[in-house]
Image (tube, rainbow, N blue to C red; front, side, top):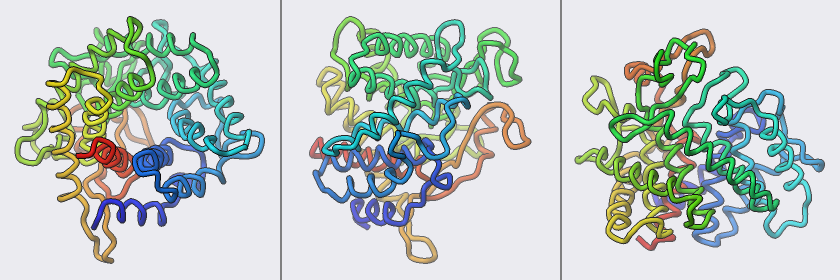
Length: 366
């Protein structure tokens, strides 16, 4: 099936992830639709976005099911769609909703080094997922509101998180516990034990998106350098045969490890976007483009599969992974743990990034 046809059919049948409540999973689809609209100018993508998102946003900016007192950084992410929704629409509710999400960040708990807790129920913890969920929105909001201090704060949080989660191998672990109280946390470093591919995918997308929004100046120089090193390291971890990446990124030979679609789509997007926007020198950009396009082509050719009903779906997406207690079980963050979570098809966390990666290929003309 043509990718455009697949994305259109997916959007038509998409049911908001959590019964309509404002959530990051829907935000993944919204980002994908926004990128497709930017790449093609085709109004159907913007129409899909409004049809799905508008019922979640009240006239006063209240968001369906959203409670800022949960201090859940995930809930902030879908707020990036508000800026696109507002374009060409004389409707104040989008700005009011963005103000509500920014208000959560004003009082969101932080570790002493300044980074937001991942969630109130995950205290003292910084997860790579959360960097993508909160900080690009903070920067986009700050630019729209003229609040430059929020940009400096976000950049500092990135710099700190990259130090706290870095591995000797050039990658980043899923999480960090500043209290060292979680069983998954190393008693000395506070780090979780393994490198989960999708967590690194969230990080790579966050870094590239932030650099795309800000000038190449002294304030972003360190992050730009670290981003370049990370993207280069990601290309070296790409499977030779398939062009995709394993679920446990730093243990490719682990028994049962598999090539996971959502992380591979995220890497494809980040690599191609960084190259297209000229974030790095031409020789490096060429290598990043090649790796990203190879992964995208592999996903489109091997992971879009018709099910028993003849519906084409994106396959081999890990449903979820986390750290600590959740629904009666304890996720210890070991490499083996990441191979126990369910594998599903057509999940928003995979399809949204695939939309984004495909849009990048269109914008780059490759």
